[in-house]
Image (cartoon, rainbow, N blue to C red; front, side):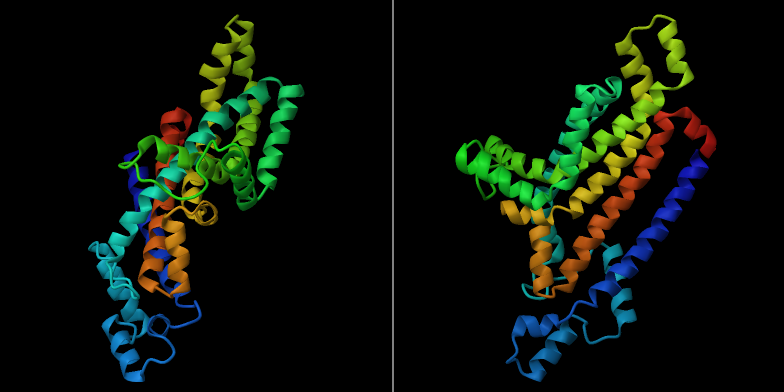
Length: 316
């Protein structure tokens, strides 16, 4: 198991290196010059050249990348070109909002989708199963921005159950801030809730058809014990994979949701930075989300061994 962990860590570091190269190069393909975007079209060539030299944009791509990668390894994410503020400070002020939103959506997915999938699998072909399948189909089909607007119109504008727009920090109003995250979390997590519900149903159906489940039923064990102690644990392996990978996708996919609900998270910062051609901020945000995604993938892979000893044995 230790050897496997070391190998996975090595492959993770290689993946992060390749990701950093891809992020750096692809961002350079964005049309426009960040210095010209900041100074305006009327700026003198001398002023443009001085500012490009100040931020190292006058160097070739390889020296720029090596300097940036070296600074990232030491924890220095650079400075924003338009504002001259440290990129780390900008991210630290926005990341908690996106993180809480992703956690809310993930919690919603686990609490709602897994019981839905189990209920559908144990009542296959009945009304419960058909309702879950129809609900998940709607969740997969409806766009998140449209769902967010409909939720705002119904629960915020008409019923006044939740705030319409804006954000309150937890230090100012804890419960008010929680209420402000409910609708964005539902809008963001609806797609992944539907996916996890269908995945749980399919996985449970496969496990319930196994011989050891039939033997357990024949031995007189209660249905609840068979479903939740024996079947669900083994059915959770593909579900854990989907939930873990979805969390990384939620962090990167919150851009539209944050725009609809006017949340000051990483998504709004990323869009503003793209508009201003702010290379250091764009690189840092995309790299951060990529690192989280890769690390979660690693943790989910290692979690397999605790859920199913057969996986741990195979890896050894």
